[in-house]
Image (cartoon, helix red, strand yellow):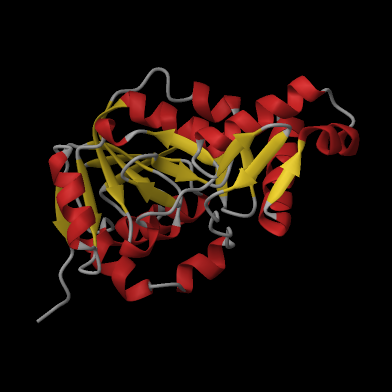
Length: 258
C-alpha cells in the first residue's frame, strides 16, 4: 500500500510538471503493469485532478502543495485562532470529542485548556502537547505510525484504536474543500483515518480557513453530505456559503473582534 501511495504521488508530480502522462511510459518507469497504472490514473481522476484519455491522462486541476506543520502553524494564524476559539464554544462539559491533527485544529486545543470535564481523542502530537497540562481535559491518543511531516499518527493501529469508541463531535481539519469533490487531504493513510473518525462521531464539524475552499488534494476523506457544520473566516465567498447551506451544512463564520 505504501508503494502504491508513493507511486501515485510521483505520477501526480509528473502530471503537474508535464501536463499529461502516458500509460506505457509510466509502466516502464515504475516497472509495473499497464493495468496497475490505469488504476493509478483512475484514482487520480476520481479526485478531480486529471482526466483520462486514450493511452494516458491530462492534468485538469493543480493540487495544492503540502507544507510542513511548522509552516502551516505560521500561515493565516490570526484567522485560525478565531476559528479555534469559535469551535471551542461548541464544546460542553461532559463532551467526548475527536480533534484531528492539523494547524487549525491545534488552535481549538489551545482554547480548550480551561474547559472542564472534556475527553479528547487525537492523532496529533502537537494537539496532545497543547492539552497535556489542561486539568479538565482527559487526553487519549490513537497510537500508530508517526508521520513527521504533520506530527500525526496514522495507519492500521490508529484506525483500529477508534473501534471501541463513540464520540459526540469530530473536529476535522482538511487540506481542501470542494463543493463537488468534498473533503480532501494530501496523504492517503491520513484520509483513511479521517474517514474512520467520521464513522465514529455523531456530529462532524470541519475547521478551515477560506483559502482551502475550491481546493482538491489527491486523497478524498469523504463527501460533504456527512458534514454538519463548517467553521471558517469571513473570507468565505457568497458562492461557497450558499453552496454549503444548500447541502444542509451550518456555516459558522468566526468574525474578527470589533
